[in-house]
Image 1 (cartoon, rainbow, N blue to C red):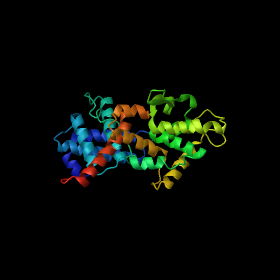
Image 2: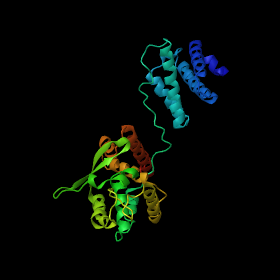
Image 3: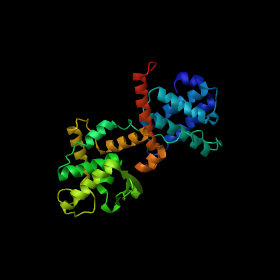
Image 4: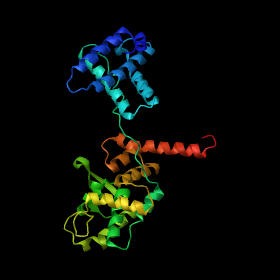
Length: 310
């Protein structure tokens, strides 16, 4: 610690911190830079505790942890730095408990896992998404297939691997008198989900299936096929999305942009978080929550621009 920190941090805090850092230094695989980063994090936390009138690590509460993390954010620290800070705090409490120096509840237990998004996902506006959907020709076999591809990515919110891997046997057309068909999707880790697929997106998928797919003389069971009847390649799907974005005068995007856009537009249209989570196949609700953060940013910008007191 520097001299200013030494003056304001209690001997007990300093001693336990020094002992913990000494124990860390003895662990194989930790670089000097990593040790210095942990030391810096915990010196900051020790200073915070001292400023709060606390002289021991055992006095730290979950509210203290929240305030320490908030202070890190206010200083403009990157998400990765904030995550390391939380890891440092968890580490010292594991050490204190193992040494019999702390018996209480872990004050970091409510902090949750920090998601290290470099930035919020980019999305298209509804107008941009529809313009992209209308870009492929409706009068050629390739155009019909690509309209179906874009419908699956945006209308179904599918990952590109899910779209090109979709089997004919997993597509259920809406029955007469019903408005919605269904897709059985095999997602990450082999997890299956059943999602509704209706409206224009469903119509475009079946325009391809009914009018052109059989003419490709299918050799593979997937819905989307290349000219020679084989499964559409994932890499080719990426290229197609970028090419159509260019033709639609949109910024460079990738297939996942359409999944991001689907999620954001569902939530903006009133979809509840749990339903959107199931629709997208997210295993963790916090993955879906990032789209609500994006909406908040957009609302703040709208308020600032249009509200007389913004």
